[in-house]
Length: 249
Ligand code: URA
Image 1: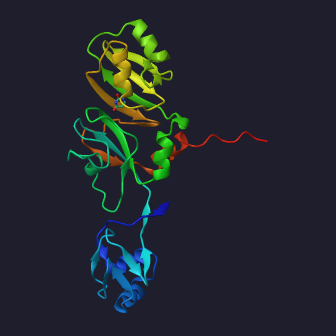
Image 2: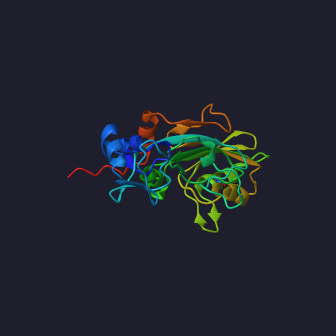
Image 3: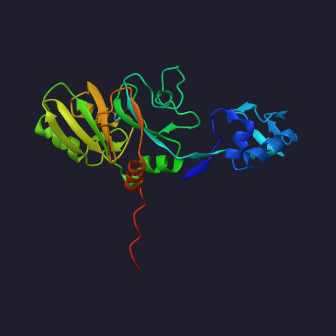
């Protein structure tokens, strides 16, 4: 499984061309020596020149890019780390937590800066779109500390639907796992949704952690740690966001 994006791994020009499928390593060296290759605006005739894919490589004027595997990483986001790919205030980002040269990763959905827990990063734009599209209703589970026991009436409202300024929420699974601590599973993902829902029933959130995303659980991945998902886990994610099978006939 691969897609065509420029690689950011540093490698020698001839090897880069061979990886991109232009020619064998030996033939690529000849192509470079013949002056047919440019890196940026410069004609490069040294096959050993290092390139990292951040500057355009062209053969006879045609762009060359390396096929990059599609990957998904799980990150246990700490508080204070933002889940955008870049931050205008120079705060650390979830993307900067993963050391994966050559992989252009971006976050699947968002967590607030002060929310901790499970966030996925991927270079597979199609999978990311499906996992966050409301149509697929991929469940996301949070543990919210509210500080005080939540009564039955508030729990029922949270379960059945809370009136927010951008409309009522969909039914949610809500369990009080200990006094003042709720486990909440949502099948939608509006901005600051858990915080707004809890505030609306009179219980502002003191701390919030996402513990599951679709079929995946944070498990024992420690705060600040990351791990690459196995092919079987990626397949379970794909299944969770698969278009519904067509009815026969
Ligand atoms: N709901 C919130 O309020 N914040 C998050 O980060 C995720 C869900």
